[in-house]
Image (cartoon, rainbow, N blue to C red; front, side, top):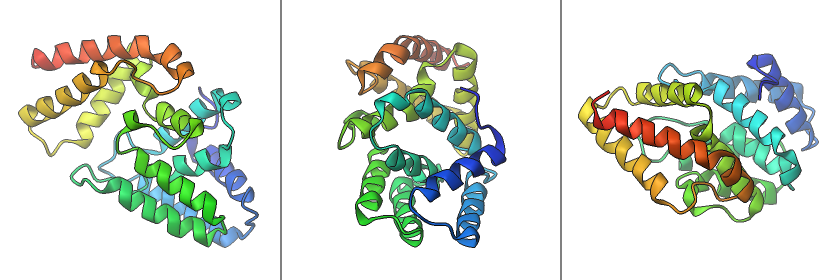
Length: 218
């Protein structure tokens, strides 16, 4: 998944997605895109960045045949981490509120706004799933990094640790270990069969390796 990297690639995607709403106001479209870029480029972000957006778009495009409502998923990508502060617990709610407001200004239908908001809120706990199969595909794609090759996974783990730099090592190990063990304790890591089949095996191997490192104080 290497297409569309960089800000220019994301800008092209943004314009395409906004045009599906029938909005051709260049000043508004440009202003909102620049605002999103600033949010995803905040200095405390190391994983939840513009690169994460690109990766997620690439992942969804790879599985485009599985998706019935690509517009809903596209705007969920744009806004799901638009508000992100590792010290807070209301990031999803605040991101959903931003999505509702900005999609309204872009002329999105009430149904689309509602579905995007519901999907962003569902990222509080990916295991609970969403309202339908499209939602589950998005939620699976958002955590598919767990099932990537070892070097990519290890980079992700380091980036997430950097975002939680405010935690000391003991607190980080406790919290991260709990999350990883809860993930592997599930019968399935991913909601959809296609993601479970493609990513779950590698995800379990990656998580086991990280848990061993955490237990050893690595």
